[in-house]
Figure 1 (cartoon, helix red, strand yellow):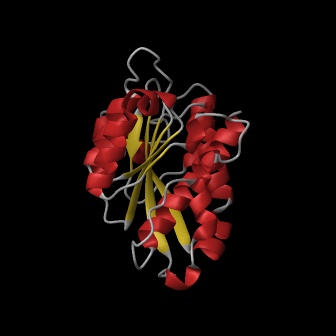
Figure 2 (cartoon, rainbow, N blue to C red):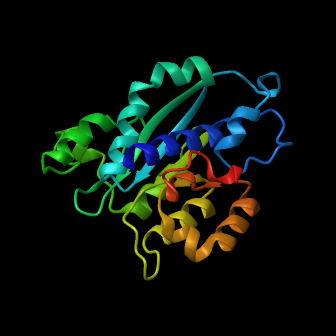
Length: 219
């Protein structure tokens, strides 16, 4: 279900952020189950900022953004983490990026009403970017300690595009990547996993398959 996919995306995000925040990168985090194995005594617990870029802002992307905003205080208190959605790229509603952070819940309301991401006045117009590639490039240039690409575009069963290109570009640019899209995993798992390892980034995809199973990597 969309709700389960979004919950998995949130946990994958926490895994990526806590792994990157660890004082020693001795552990390799393979999935959401590892969040329960983190020894907090080995982690730098200063508040860490994560800048997020959302590529895809359909039902799953919007349902990811809203609880993330609602859980802001919880994430700061329990995980020493502050998250900002700085970019949103869509196929039909435009693409925006603002280094200071976007109001994603407000953007979701605009999109659901049939508007575009540029309908928020002058500030929204100034945040306009050309496409998802431009967003990923800007996200990679962020000064935030953590840069995470959240990929939730529509599945293409023929070639896994454009999701495959999004994931590949995000990893090449130095971003952690979390996806709910089956395509990149089915078509290029080995390539993307190797690329993530070479870049010392995480490629996480718990939200992509088996909605009825809470954590499939435990199987």
